[in-house]
Image (cartoon, rainbow, N blue to C red; front, side, top):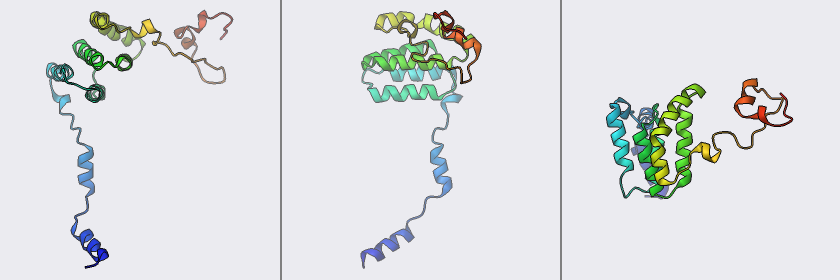
Length: 171
């Protein structure tokens, strides 16, 4: 039997993948955890992140899963995540995680309340691990952003980003 004929019979006998099978595998993330009560959800991530043998990939996987869900993590989960990040010695991951939490807290009003609460609860752990807050590092505001008059820019944003305090800057 020639190689071409063997390939032809193989293609006829192999069942093609149906669209429903592909669609079903794409929906593997079944969101079972969204149906869990909050304490079970928190315990799952705290236990997972508190494992001593956890590596960098697993920490990133857990943090990605936390941010996939439409929840702001409990301060105990944040503490476990920060400890895991320091255990694998990834300081930048700690900061990115804190930035992501700050963004998930919503608009400015909610951010002050919710993010402020999380930071007061997590502050002892941050001090223990030697992690600076975003505000201490100046990462709470854009670093190299200069608004240009030809682009749309709300007047209230000048004050929010501190441009009203710069000498000679008129808007």
